[in-house]
Each structure stands twice: as structure tokens, then as C-alpha cells.
Length: 165
Picture 1 (cartoon, rainbow, N blue to C red):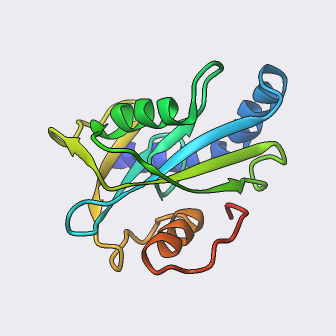
Picture 2: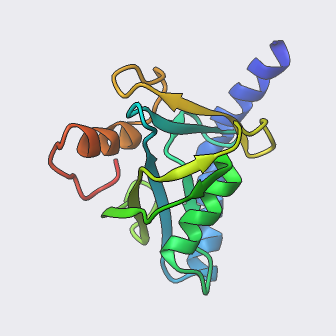
Picture 3: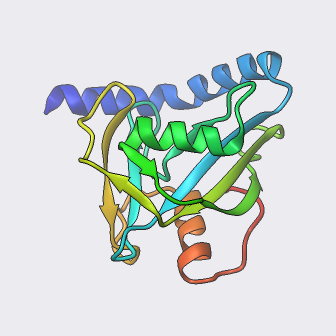
């Protein structure tokens, strides 16, 4: 338990510097960064969230779009990698957001996924330390603000805020 707490503290301390380092690299490797995230909803309208090893809080699954990859391909890959989720039907593009707290060059496409299969919950690994489906009215306390806003926009039909926050 003490090792976990120490690692969490270290991650929290290093997180801002690591984020800046990654985005400094991406500024030269990619002119603009583009990512995908998914609001994955099961038959009971519970939302799938993930917890990364390298950033704090619970997030929607997703990640960066690689060179030569479509948004849908990136979404499909990220859902499989992070949640063992396989798209069964077409995801619905919900919106595109400017993620300006990370970089003025970062954009995130958000999809709503209702048609999928998941053979089992994935085991924790170096990137994803936990994941699961949660009632939208009982999200984990450390669910990020951006994640909470996207869920409210989708589930409660709240007006879209086009910046990630």
C-alpha cells in the first residue's frame, strides 16, 4: 500500500512536467495533435471509464490519432487496447473539442458508442490501472472535469462546451 501511495504522489508531482514534455515533442512530430475519446454506454446506460497510470483521475477511453489513421480506426484501436471493447455498430460522432489546457494545437473528437462487445474486463497493465462501467449519477469522485462535462452533454443533453476543460 505504501508503494502505491508513493507512486501516486510521484505521478502527481511529475504529471505537469511529463505532459509538457510530451506536447513539446508532439509539437515537432505533429503539427497539430488530434485525439479521440468515447462515451461508451452499456445496456443499462452506465458509462465506461479508465484510470491511467500516468495521469490522475478517471477518463473516457481514447487516445491519439496516428499518422495515416482515420478517426474511426483510432477509436477502434484505443477501445480495444484500453477496454477490450470491440465496435459492433457505427459510433456516432458527438463533437470536436479544443483541448486548450493541454495545447492550443490539441483537438479531441468525441464519439458515442452504444453498440459494442466486451468479452471480459481487461487486467491492469502499465498504461491502464483500472477500468469499468459506472452509473452516470455515481461516477468515481476523481473523475475529471472534462469527462464529467462530456457525459452530462451526452446523457443529460446539456449544451456542448467546445473546449475540453
